[in-house]
Image (spheres, protein in one colour):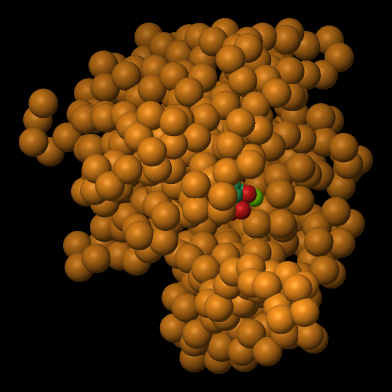
Length: 371
Ligand code: IPM
Ligand code: MG
């Protein structure tokens, strides 16, 4: 393999993860063969399968590889089998450790509607048509990681659960900077979202974002919005949004809301990025927004498009291969325009297909592009 090969660690994980990853790897193989992009792909365990086989939600060896590759491509983790596990032995800890140890503070969750799917949204067509929202979620701070945390027993025998919402100025500034930079390449509008009406961390968030805006990004339109209102506005009039910058927990929830506007969670990719090093390279992990969907795992019924689109984001953000990213995204669009649907995006009059057949169709569309 050429020494300048781009190194990718695939972590399929649990549930439908292995199925959607299998189809995505076919796309990478295709790019290697037909576009001569040199990838060096390795695969390892994460989540419940790692707990079963290696005794931890992610092994030290896998962590080491994740920290050394150019990009990590992640499937999904979790399932009922591991629900009773103690907190530190839950499959999700594998993902949270990757985010934390790779310092992936910026989570990009684009929600765009494919025209062919606009009618699959539970919202009215005229509300969702043409939406293009980027939810930028802070991913390594806030209540997910704040200390103190834990469950203790009080002297009176009651139990107490504690988590801490905490943000420092530097954490707020670095995520807001990414938000303003993204907005400059889009429609130049940022909504900064917090709960400054009830939380001091929200007051600080609002003040720091405003200061940064005034000092460095006066050309970008900035709005502050409370998180509950933002959830409501997302379903009322999503087209008002361009970039939404928000904390870890609000971002978790708002990105689920934004994703459903598009008709299916099964369509949405994401990128989690670290800070740029002196060569401009960032640590990066790409993953579909959907979860492991244990109810349909192993049935060849899952939608592989979110993971395939996550790989397209990897081509764009980590490998600077915009032409190849366009090809993959274009192939997905053509497949949808042609009427193929996995169960999650099935519509009357369309052809319901399996994970594998959907993968076949993407490859076929890619083949047409080089024929
Ligand atoms: C997400 C998921 C994760 C989160 C879980 C699986 C830990 O919901 O990526 O949105 O809460 O961050
Ligand atoms: Mg979530």
